[in-house]
Length: 384
Image (tube, rainbow, N blue to C red):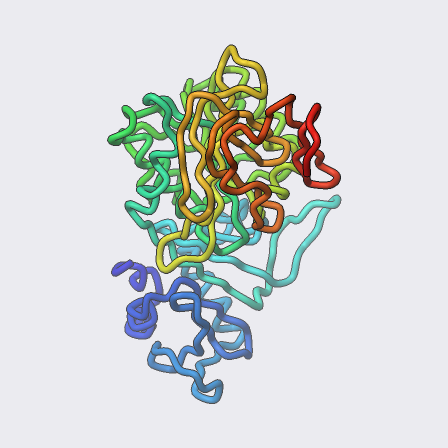
């Protein structure tokens, strides 16, 4: 962070040094518009000295010629060397910082060739938070083995920050398990922040990074060439990514991934509830991501689908362990069979069953989950 300002023209470095001292996470430059920065989630105008102000009239403005000169300098006066990234709408700077670029798109045969006459630059400042994963590491391990884990949150809540630190800690080894070889498919250069192929962020000593490669292609390539025990990808989305992830799991590779979403319904409607053992739901935190809920969806090997051993954690910290559970992954539900306990399902955040009395559930028959009505029904017994 202290050296980021040195990437800018010498005559501008005093200004940019002041900007970056303000703990800015994002700086937006629009041609003929006030300069804006985001500091701890709040938006400010940037004045002529690089400080923050609430008053638009005091904000600095750049014209398009200034933006073009600045962009050319950040490309080290070799824009064609960055053309592959630029046509995707961003550049990765030394230090792993990301420069979003928009302007006039040049198309050829239905494909973007370049973006010229840039009218807006968005500088997203890379900030590693070592220890961001400490709060969730215990959930990712079972007897020293990694679980398939999915991180879910709306945009801007720290999915990538958390994933980056988990990769580092799993790669180096930690109190819960030995170091693992991890393959990272960094399609948008956000995890490793590679500059000229070299990761600028610390992803651990046993991590191999495939930069700028589509996830579906990259996962297959890494399995063939680097034999990882864990694959990490950011922002699952396309169906081909999910299919390749399934193939990796069939090869015995564990998956760490993120996806946009807010609750368990967002996971189940995409069919991901049966592919992962651990689901981490995040909300906005300052500065580190805030853990809202953990959903453990672990089926024990060799047991029937509705019988498993494990631990269930609710959003408010209640937890218990037992030797026998009735699990209903389609409904995001797990409840102890024939014993007292606490259970919850997250359809809108309200508990479905809570503080269950010993023997009430499953007495006289099995329980089934009704997705349509979002209710748990007992069969062979009269009851609600």
